[in-house]
Image (cartoon, rainbow, N blue to C red; front, side, top):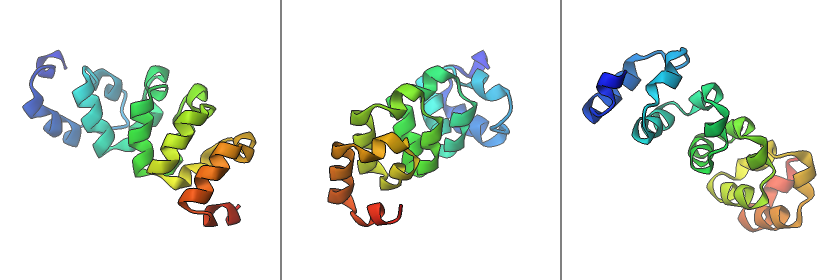
Length: 124
């Protein structure tokens, strides 16, 4: 893998051919550029990544942009960070369905939901 570390022209090719849920995924992440490409192409790899990636706001934002379901893989610190959740709701309103029940009564979160799409509150 180190051979390809500085050869960005190979990144897409490698990401396309490697079975993404294999143990090699963690070894492929040798820099942020590769990780960014992998997340964009296969956002579900978040479940295979180490905790330090699951605590990274940028990575969680990127995967939640594709699917709100991936919020469940965020670290506990991010799952209870009101400011972060408010930012995520702007990206993907359906994050609301995956936040902790205790946060659903938070005034700021409810204001944000009502502002973006109040119908979401009626679905619960």
